[in-house]
Image (cartoon, rainbow, N blue to C red; front, side, top):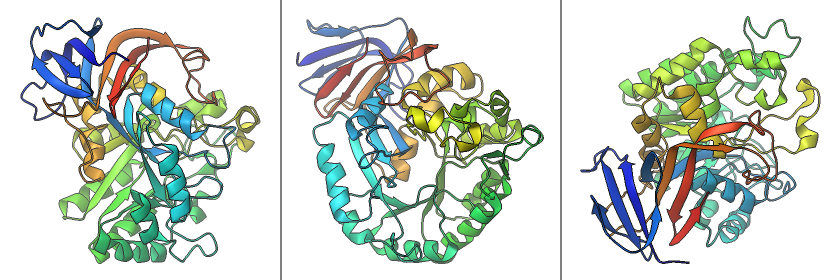
Length: 422
């Protein structure tokens, strides 16, 4: 491939950068940023557009993993390709494949499978052993093999197990991630319990299940004097609890799924199985509280919660459909369609770059002369359709299927590679 590229007249979004919010040119030669400035002249491949924005590569803190075991939903390669097309150069995957990622061999499988891809894979390992859910898995071995964090994903984590994990990982600095929810309070509900859903006949789950668990797990983290990351918070009470914990000096961070910022449980009235998500879509009051939490810094990052499901898992009655929807390739278009009036583009980008980078202990990149090029270029006005020709996943579980989108990633640089998306 050609070795030199010139990004022409793009607005740089990187907080703290001397050229932040300015329209600049960026020259990339042999995988490195050779020059930044105005009106750079060079006889190379041009990257141009009507309204370009450039930033460091996005980081996703939560993506469901289908490989190994469920490659009919998505192979690892397809998942990484979906991430790249969505603007992500770093992907953190959940460990609940079949078999689960619970030892160094399974971590090694993922690390080796993702070698030489444009997207950097950061696998997580399970917290607890499959033989006994109150016993820790081989955390230290997985950490040394390349596991970036430990989580039980959507599965239950007792306070006792959480305490063990926080104390055990504290000496070697591993990250513990929790999706806080009291399963006994969920009562196997499939949608949020609210005035909107109570008449649908669907099994409901109260938001109480989440924020009671958030409250308890904050206390466990404070007792252990250890950091804890909450994934996919979805209720206004969770936002308030985390905000107060941060004020008190607790080592708490959190993220929110893009769907929880964009949609509410009113979508359930369509009975579209692609709105059956976990955590479930909540009320408009919750959505507004999440947006406010992002704006005031309580929420550190936005994640995709990308979850491929094959047709047999989705085209069934709502009660029986599996949870999850595709989202990696739709992050930008959803922002522009649903969030642009409430969240600045600058904050949106930092919630996908420096925000998750800080959660992962400064793994985010920068756009500076001499740096290896780890950046993306998006065209804010480009139109495209999410269909078989553009979808990189093996699955197509999305309410956006065959619908026109506005806002597109047109180029991704990382690992001395480039992907173009026309």
